[in-house]
Amino acid sequence: MDEILKRLDKLERLIESQNIVQKDVLNFNEACIYLELSQSHLYKLTSTRQIPHFCPQGKKLYFNRHELDAWLQRNRQTTTDEIEKQATNYIIKKGRA
Image (tube, rainbow, N blue to C red; front, side):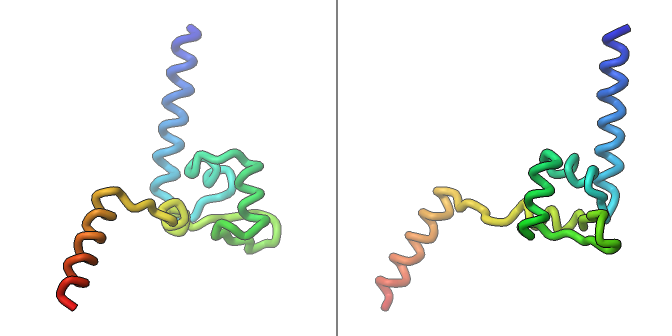
């Protein structure tokens, strides 16, 4: 019986996460799930204005899923291959000058 309850809980969480991915505007709890952040950490990010959010009524927080995706993808780290290509291109261009 315990195993069935665990599997049911897992299925409920999976369905909930699928519904979140289909929405354009997320509420605070959905954003926590989507970003995999604790509520306290997300509150800190909103209070310090480090993450884009909306507060239309002055209390409830909402998030645009596409803006959250862009926020997650900021500060991309360059791979070693990309750095090597940039260095090679720099040397080639400098040699032509």
